[in-house]
Length: 254
Ligand code: CIR
Image (tube, rainbow, N blue to C red; front, side, top):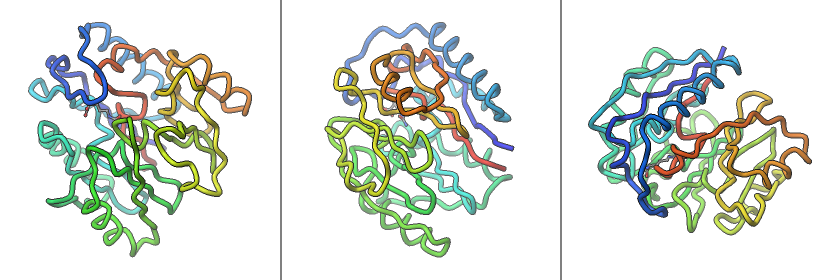
């Protein structure tokens, strides 16, 4: 059984953090209806969805991925790199408590879950605008007893590590190598995003299916050529807040 934690879109979403994108008018109703369809996809793929209530004062709170990293043995509550996002972790920690013992990233560490790519016992953390070396060291120390290795990875031109690379099948990564060095992940098989779609590397794997944005038809062909089974979703309005498909949920086995 898989649980997916999501959170309703904040009425203040138009005031979200933006780093690499310009602010565009955001239609809250369209964003909410895209989010509803995204949640329905998670349920259709077998997740038991735990929908946290809206936090009107926290513009980015729909992006629950950034608040925690859920592993088999423990859940790590992050300390988001953007100060405006730090209060987001409280409700997610509360929601995770029944499922895992919690550990916390402490100052001066900062980490967004969007920077954390888990491949079995190998964990990669983007050294980005949001996540720093202190968080990597804390994570390494806390997770070593469980047999995890934790490696910091430089990323450029994008918000998070998982803007640049995500896992789409066992030992198979979808990647934009202009944003992150692919050699770090050896011996993983790499599928490149189409050069016309630099933002296409963020895909959400649920079992053998990958949730993938409709906005990237050229990269979709690369994935289909490699027999990755896709389910397409429209997240165009959510993307205006610099979010993708991974960031709107925390998915883990119970
Ligand atoms: C932010 O800048 O923090 C939000 N506007 C977007 C966060 C997206 N999160 C993610 O991709 N994991």
